Image (cartoon, rainbow, N blue to C red; front, side, top):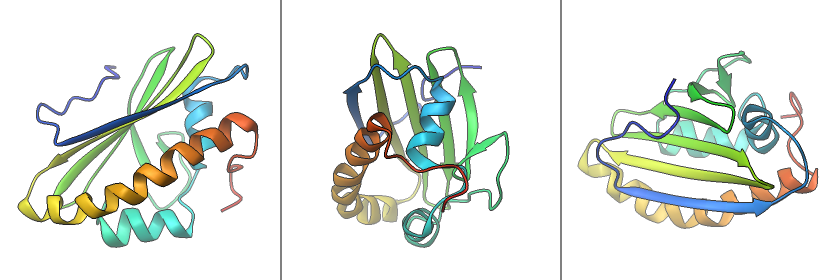
Length: 144
């Protein structure tokens, strides 16, 4: 499966990187960052505000409700969509680094109105979640 975002048009992207000596697969990193199911804050942001259609239960095919849409030995791509936007989260782990990249495509005009202000919150939360996972203080599976 391809891991890079398949979105032909990308309206928003970011990437956060942290160095680490922890050896985990990209999927293990994604689960360390987000957990197996979304926590209350993630449910509020992802489902309520963004309207993303996420799985409600644990599954080998999802991470925190996001569908695993691609994977390789170095990366995993998670995907979710709502009626107005499509988003990919890509976690890469290689060469002593782990990174989290976000890709958003606006499928309707209101996506820009909603994601624009929310991206400020995202830029504050995402790097902290990544650093927390790298330091071992990350979300534990099922502890939501």
